[in-house]
Length: 263
Ligand code: MF3
Ligand code: CO
Ligand code: CO
Image 1 (cartoon, rainbow, N blue to C red):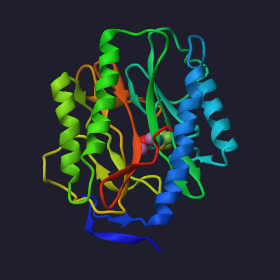
Image 2 (tube, protein in one colour; image 1 turned 180 degrees about the vertical axis):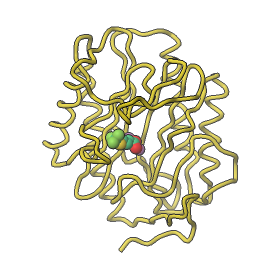
Image 3 (spheres, rainbow, N blue to C red; image 1 turned 90 degrees about the vertical axis):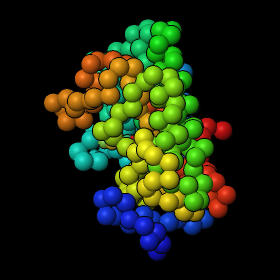
């Protein structure tokens, strides 16, 4: 039986609190995600299709004893989301999408291992890219880690969002508001919603045992996105570049545990 917090999120859902078994399960699932994202690095080169990268990640996850949780999720059919250049998130792997030098891409995986979901994503660069693209990627990663650094019992989700927002403002990038982080654990997408902007001291108060993702998306241009006719692919409306990083984390007695860090 999972305990729940007495706090409810904006959607009225209660927030699960996990104990040592949950943290151990998430650490194991998160490790598969991290190793998968490490493994795929060597395959990122001009000429490879995003469908091929998806197959490689799927095989990796299955060989690790995990199931890609995205397959069958609201009708999604792939083991990964691969979002190239102006694709913000939920890019669909495609035989026809061939990487070329200068592309930047996010690969997002969620292996489910023994019922636990390790949700993580990273950016990759094909060959060499522009200074602007490199700055965007570095700022988005810095923002994720700043958000994670704000996590400890008694801090709030507003503190997390604020920490992320400070990096975006300093680096003059915009924050995508249409997608957020989420509770994760036995359920792939659970309460609470984790916004990537906020005000200090507002929102849910963090308690030991809460487990959620932080997954900021920054755009080089305007923040607005649109979802294409396939129902998944989210792109920047102005076609500017977008970057995203994601970790699954747990609130501990003293601070935070990152489940999806690579060793
Ligand atoms: N992994 C994504 C997330 O970070 C969700 C992908 S759902 C899919 O929450 F169906 F698009 F794969
Ligand atoms: Co997620
Ligand atoms: Co994800």
